[in-house]
Image (cartoon, rainbow, N blue to C red; front, top):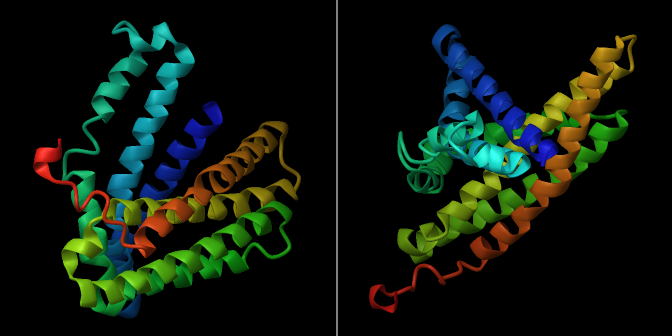
Length: 251
């Protein structure tokens, strides 16, 4: 549970820092660099908001579970952290709205420029893993996940044109979940590359522990969380109508 918390929280922080850097580029750069940063930032914003707040709350839930009654009662801080962080999936647009925004709008903006840039950057970091034992393993999994996400996105694009928005967007939450796990895994790949290269140098004992922790958290997220995108992909590829066709009086 502690390792899951670490992978959720530090993955989210990394994504927020990455997106913050894109904001700086948009505000200070010129030309193509500025335009590309804006395209990528537009695509990532629903993922940054929704997935970080979802995973943050999961980490809070695990913190309460770890501490038992000492986490549940009002006298201890993790209970308040849970209550405070429960707001994050709600405000600034609920995460359901973020999912509709991602699949219904952001993915297709500017001829899918943001999505293409995301794939290009992920592929570039996959290339950086060459010669690194752990990171190469992670990169292989992420490469396969990227191929699956691209396949699903293309399928949904065709569906949007032929079946309309209602049927295509009915499972937008699954699409957000799938893309979020891909992007979080990418953030962990970036960290694992840095960590593995650092461990090959003469670092102190405390630094070794820090970098080993990064590698272990990356391994956790990519082995334990990323594979669940296959369920999301199956529901999206079949345009599953379970939720769409539920009737009000059946409740």
